Amino acid sequence: MTSIGDWAFNGCSSLTSFTIPNSVTSIGDGAFDGCSGLTSITIPNGVTSIGVWAFAGCSGLTSITIPDGVTSIGDEAFYRCKGLTSITIPNSVTSIGAGAFQYCSLTSITISNSVTSIGVGALGCSGLTSINVDPDNNNYDSRNNCNAIIETASNTLIAGCKKTEIPNSVTSIGDEAFYDCFSLRSITIPNGVTSIGDRAFWGCQYLNYVTIPNSVTSIGVAAFLGCCSLTSVTIPNSVTSIGNEVFAACSSLTSITIPNSVTSIGNSAFCNCSSLTSITIPNSVTSIGYYAFDSCFRLLKVTVERNTPLEIASSAFSNSNYQNATLDVPKGTKALYEAANVWKDFRNIDDCLIVTDKITIGEDGMGTFCSTLALDFSGTDEIKAYIVSAFKPSTGEVTLTRITDVPANTGIVVKGAAGTYSIPTGPGETIVSNMLRGVTMNTVLNKVDGDYTNYILAKKNGSLGFYAVVDGSTLSAHKAYLPLPTASLPSGARSIKLVFEDGGTTGVSEASHINDNGEMINDNVYDLQGRRVTKPTRGLYIVNGRKFVIK
Image 1 (tube, one colour):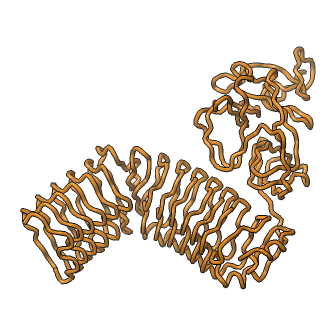
Image 2 (cartoon, rainbow, N blue to C red):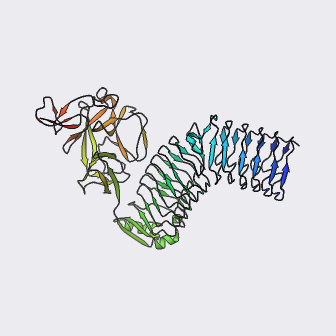
Image 3 (cartoon, rainbow, N blue to C red):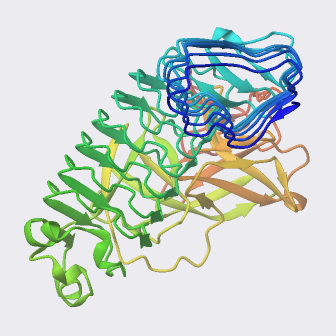
């Protein structure tokens, strides 16, 4: 006999032991699937492959030795071998299939240096505390003793455990990386991570704390499904969509913040979030999937920031929500919602909502901003909004013109005392001339883009101005940058001076006086009105962006 065929002993639940003859070289798919009474099995050295589901459901197996000749372990080969606590993977193995050891009771595992392929969710063992990769493996690593498997080339964490510490060099968390990691209590995702894969934290029942950094732009399907101890989540404003079932069955989730960057909420995204009491749907959302908030029985307040009702399916909410929850909509839009399909099913509709967006200004007193809402700055002088209306190549100056009515998705410069301001929405009239470009998600910029050179607002050596970006720089979501025609720039220009139409000059002194390190290399003197002074006398002046007194 040279092989054990597919499903040969499938479902032989009374089989307790088996010795495979030395002549056998392959174990077929599902060969011992469901042999729950099997407690002992010997695999001879001649075996080179273990098929899909070969030992799946052999819950009585506590240990197994894979001989040196085996080169591949098939998908879900040891799936639901709940008694399996230890296993040795020999150096001959080159591939480990998807879900190969899912729902086993392994506490530690070492990946040999010969492994070149590991399938999605290969581990998925809730009791794992130690994961190591042989240092000589060229495809995978466990850098910084992180207790995880990282795909070296892509910096993707593909398998973790309850003791994993994600290194800062990781850029993505792969599909099913922490699948059913029952013992995981908390995890910190570093700022370099841009994506969280499908079912990445599926079934992590005791996960009660997770940080999602602003670098993350996508969260996969069912990424946090069944994380029933998770009480609150803040989705960063770099995320544009909430996929299907992302937070489904997070039964302890009482609050969720959806940022203005999100445009879609997927099917069953918050289904069975039975502790959720309120939800705010921002103006940016253009689609809500089927059963998105189904079975959220404690949901008593639904806030919608859109002035025009969105078309949604009746299954988006439960009947109890339509009967018991209050629908808060923008002021003056009640009649629209009372006439709109599905929204009109809410028994209580209140249009007292004044929609605002929050802007934070740092200690420098200036910054850039871009909102997905149309904003009205007419009600306050504490914070002012400006567009860049003109560029004067001869002096390296841009003119900033104050505006009060800012359309959605418009890049602006904001100026005011340090603090956070709530700005109400406005009519959003069209701006004819604005040289700034706003972004609503993290955006990678290069110094030169076609015929334009890109500048960002920054402070260097005490001076605020627009400075040329470094290639590969990431501009944060809801910020703005300034692209200027390269041909019109002064030779070697690295910085641009700011001139405000409503009075005052700030920033760098001239466009061509910044060295390669971004340092000021001139001592030009200006008066407090921004005028060049060649022979200063006694008084207060600006030198390299700083105040100087000449006595």
